[in-house]
Length: 314
Image 1 (cartoon, rainbow, N blue to C red):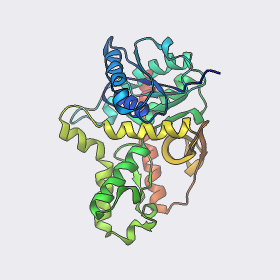
Image 2: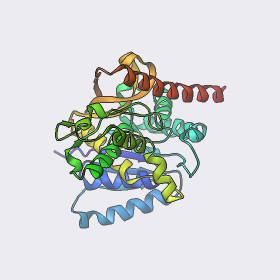
Image 3: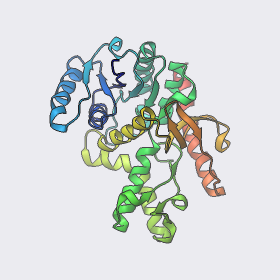
């Protein structure tokens, strides 16, 4: 019998999309279809990636296209299309233009892949998940935002560097929206099982929390043009791998809440079990009053973004 090859479509052949395609293929997770509105761009990058396959010792196929018909029956669709932040530009500045882009590409993608799971990467992330939910008509379990995986990765990096330990021994807990209002939780973050507050003074922890909140902006300021793409692409790989291999990993992701954490009707980053059917369970943890207040404030920022989109739509 012929082997059923798994298929991932990555929408947007910019730095994030192309690097995500590279990560997915080189990990042997799936064949990748890279699609972009610019003629020649996805084809050129896909060809370059395909030619590296024998050197990287993998046999995944990588295709570039401008036609959504080529993406038919994708298992996962990763949406990276949109404008990138520039220095001095907030995620909110991107809102209206990227909402139109995401609405358009999601509508086309789900027409050809009605059973796919959507992983949204475009910023402002939490608001774009709202757009994708509306454009796709999919249940919340199959429309997931990539935010917490990246944010927790940044927090883990900063903790490991500060303590001089392996980042693989660091577990970091991050809730809330993707941006300045995210809620890193040092109380629930550990190093080889040791709670972070037992290893680091409060003022140092707070400095790392603030650096994590500003992690994307720090990179934008250093690059001068463009934004982060290596760590976002790695975060996409973790999510796609957990879905396609049904690993049921516990990952912080942006999902639509319906009463969990006392939040209803808003997309917010929370820990979930991610498997073959998408969001298999939302994990609720007991928060302190201060943590709950911070999470509510973060949700409020998402609510403002959604309201701005609705007002712009008339």
